[in-house]
Length: 113
Image (cartoon, rainbow, N blue to C red; front, side, top):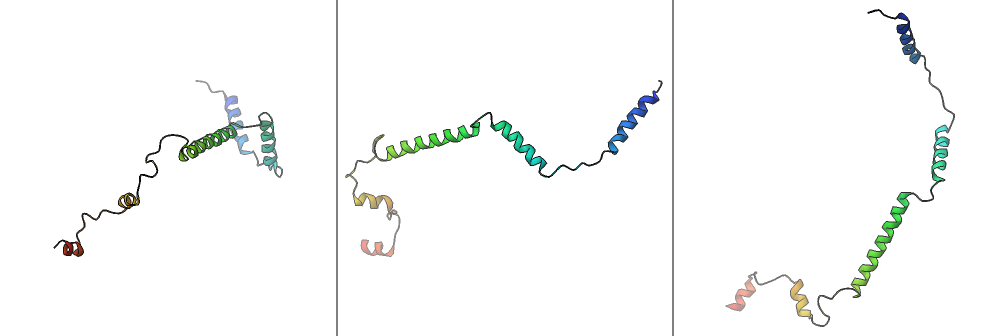
């Protein structure tokens, strides 16, 4: 197969040109100004982003849930479990005091003997 020396020379010249590239310094605050321009072009089209709408919807949902909970607590919704006036202090003490029926102490033995 015949080699084309001119193509090889052009390929070598292209590869060697990459070695001659030098670093270029950008002006001060170039990237900041460029990013500000891009953001200003983008923000001009829409007044609210989709994230802002999502935040507003979350606040509304939380407010509705809180109002429902407050209404439920004050008796506006549902039935009460225990009607007021039927529970006594004895019931309260029996419910929140640990059971002593399984404990055997010296005092209990003396009383029963």
